Length: 138
Image (cartoon, rainbow, N blue to C red; front, side, top):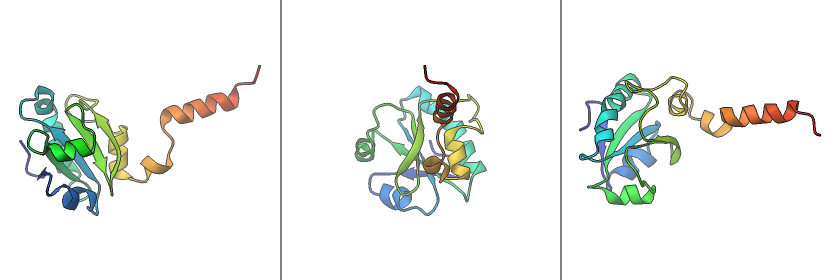
């Protein structure tokens, strides 16, 4: 169920292909029987094609490779996680848009700038900080 630019990841290849990768890796945890997994597959393939060279995309079949799924505590599928030297962020479940993804999605921003996940506060945190700074104490 992997597209042309999508790696098939296993328990034995995961560390070499994902954790030690020089580029960020988007990992799709899926199963053949999972309808939502099949529904997001075209979006995952589209991301792999669009970001080829800047991002690796791989799929882990959780039925065949339970060790990786257990290590990252995957309890529901589909689950998408973004790795760069370990998991940095991710999106669980269906992508925000049926035919793909939103450009302002956290995962898409991380592909363009992986450090943004570490240094930039979330939109909610920034809004809360701004609210607290502008609200007088009673």
